Image: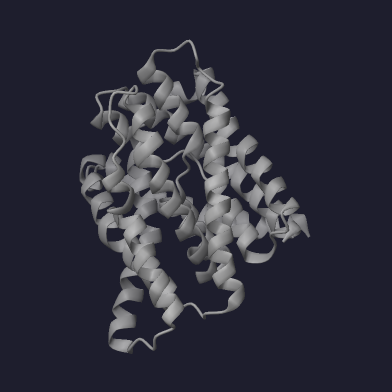
Length: 310
């Protein structure tokens, strides 16, 4: 059963990464470069992803189990980030504040929005987006508080305004009432939202491809620190959380969705935040790129294990 699940999930991961290959080629041929993709990231984060999240919530069947699942997913997402913070705090203590902060951010924060949601949707459908969206909302809470404090070398103030007023969190806050009210949405509203939301997965992976095209592959191979962070981000944290999820009695699609979110590679905004706060953006890119490449191997195995336990 594990091997069957591994094969199925590995195929979905390969499909997603093949799509990223279009972005890689587009960047190398200067048709669509990483500089262009930064504008596309804004479109994805501010419009397409929120529309996908809201559409999923408003079309999801309301049941007592799913209402309870929302609360459980929120608690589990918080626990995953707290574990990441705890583990990362034990590492790179002798590095300067900026470098240490980038490593800590890379270990703690997964690429839940742009990789976990597409994978969860391909594996378990809209219910995967439903639970992963809660994880993304929690991600934003921690990213705009602990995250910016770490990556700025403790110099930036925690942005509590952006904890709530960011597209990822706002879309969940809009989606939850629509889910609870169980409204009958007219087709002329629901269909355009579905079409826009369906753009999230391919566009996100094309953006990935442009980032990979600009990575220093020599550093990805020779830098030991990158491997250490990747092991923590891709293996240690997700396996610990999978065990805790299982002990807590979480089963079914929720277990799979939460595992997908926790085992995703380092968030791509590691590099973006580093650049914003005048830190080492190249290091942030290397951390995200290496963990993204290694996740081709680790994610199918861990998600397959979650599928067996589910």
